[in-house]
Image (cartoon, rainbow, N blue to C red):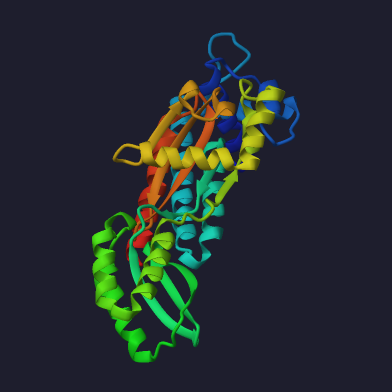
Length: 342
């Protein structure tokens, strides 16, 4: 007798229910547990076939069934195949180029939410401890120059500076060489007063312009763009009775919608995470009040050139920590491999 798709789904439902409860599983339970929309009588017939095929057994005189070793083996093999497909799917998804970062991040949180059955979030990558990569001064008109500041992660900021005297191309070239020779690769903390004074002295009559450019550089390096956060799976909260209380669930969902507290949580976890970039908050350890009945697991991912972001998974305190941490480490590794190739 062939094990068709319907029998496979019923067998999976029997095994999952038995793993969760430890009790023999009856047809009425399966009729509520699956999305097959089958009657209890039909499910009883299918379960009888599964028993005859050796995938489930009836313990003692119980009306329910439990998985046999053969049933467990099929379940594990099928599960491993599904996980392999998910890894392939994830890799294909991560092949998206950097210019499709938003789409990539949205896909990641959706896959995570589907895979873990928890609420998920991910922050767009940002540079921490920005360093200067390039300064480019160019003339707009006689009284204005454009200062283009490029920092780590190829973040570009433009500043218009007013000048009192016209600057020819040769003067701009000399100022560009002066500034880039001394400032490239430095962070804001490394640009000290002594260095600024020396640069102004070398600039001679153009010291005021150099001072304004350095001010723009400092602002460009230290400026932080608004943290973009993508979320998915918030409705998974209702799967867990301890989180499904109307007041608690409402607060938690509002937190996901407003995102400000999520941003603070993700940034804090990035600074506190261990050398693996993994941080686990359980219950009261969670800095967000609405998540005090939850566990939150975060992971820092890095795209190179100082660009870092954070992934977070929120679920009940009885979450499957092993699965969650393993999934996050897989994402970390794949993102790292993807962007190392670039």
